[in-house]
Image (cartoon, rainbow over all chains, first blue to last red; front, side, top):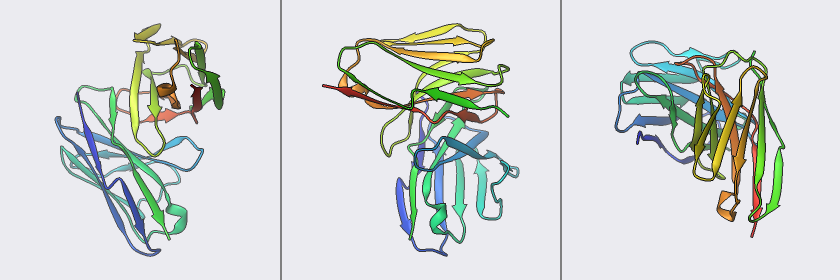
Length: 115
Length: 112
């Protein structure tokens, strides 16, 4: 079945540094990928929609200059958390949509801890 | 704006019981609804996907129903096992190429 690989699975960084998270579709081409984050005991919340070859679409309240998304190829989208702060500590998870529509396939997520 | 609510938030039952998890959504104009399982610190595993035109889907001991007009879905787990312990998430898709709106999940514990 379709597989989405996300890397790293966890990362600890110091406040003020930047962190890059990769999301790859391993056996299909994903023109659209989604980035979510989940705070403890909260729902997964959609952050942005990443479209190959164009700018990402951000949900209301998500700072596009802080969460940089690059979808340079049909199999890779990256999320860079710039100048990370402790409040950015969260579980970030990506998903990719198969050509032709749903269902969505999810990566295993990245646990980010900013100290 | 679509809102998804899951009840109960947590559930603990003895092994072997049949159980029902509930999901409701505020806007019935959905494309599909999906049930996921999330293990602690892990990603999501898709369990069942119900298209808006469907009433239910079954996979093994799992059965999910959808009543789009009333904005409800249920996930039925038969003969529960300790390995079923996880958080179960309900999510709706309002457009084929849109992201999902998730509920907060039901944290399920099956006691051996």
